[in-house]
Image (tube, rainbow, N blue to C red; front, side, top):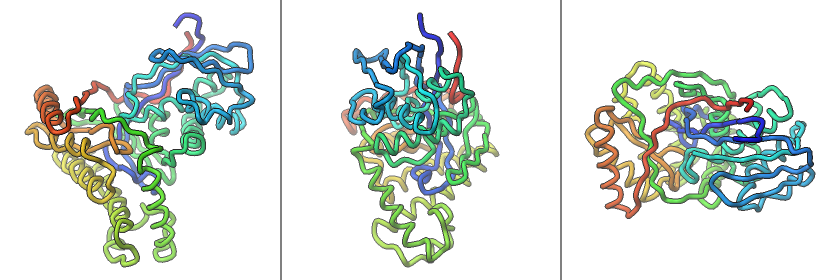
Length: 370
């Protein structure tokens, strides 16, 4: 882009398995995508951050000294929150012009918000001449999402967006931030991402409600089992647990079993057992549907259409839910027929036309001088 000094990107992400366990201290299995948010940035010699977008006519100016005041913006609140929390963490904010170009579909469950937050902070750090620390950037971006945007999220999205590695999934322990990069070798299979195209908003959805339910369950179980997070509760301890009932029992059952599925998915990926991985994807979706109740008619119809295709080993919703995308494991020579078949079945069931994305597993943050 003419006139800009740096080009900084951060990735969207897909979560292969391990849904709604990141804020419960569990392990998750995400990967960064080539779908990303790109920030073109240059200093402007003022105390203002001027925001513009390639996909919007809007232009927004943020006062560096009043960054806490922009939480109600329709566009620019994620950037303002990211800058505010980065400044609050003791970093220099330089007045600049920022042009945002986002290829992560909004409301898709592929973490466009995390990509915006992480790339904004990385751009500000690059402009100030700081060495980029992806983990610190991820942690501050998470605070922006939680404390500024109001989504009580775990660390998975921002970590994957910042720390992704091309060709690898991340086995991330959300309690300790220990991360193992696992090569994605799916053999004869491909990962196919399909968007149900039902708009969703995690602030307005039941995401925060689920977080509150699991927090309440933890308070009950802490003194009984000496745990610090729900992910520490073993399947055997849970099977003997009588302290929970109703919906709270269902929520914890999902967390315990999903954490176990992540362990088995790791082994399946490392051994190349794609049929086993596919079965785990199916089981994850069923649990998210019946126990955690975060799917909805559209995602259920999309997953069912995918699972019924002969080339598909397994399919599940990915992301926060209530709309967004499925990830499916599909034989490579059946991908095109899979896309056509799923689109027809899904549109017939819901009236929505789905979108398929051709994305590769990519790096997280990138920065270059123009």
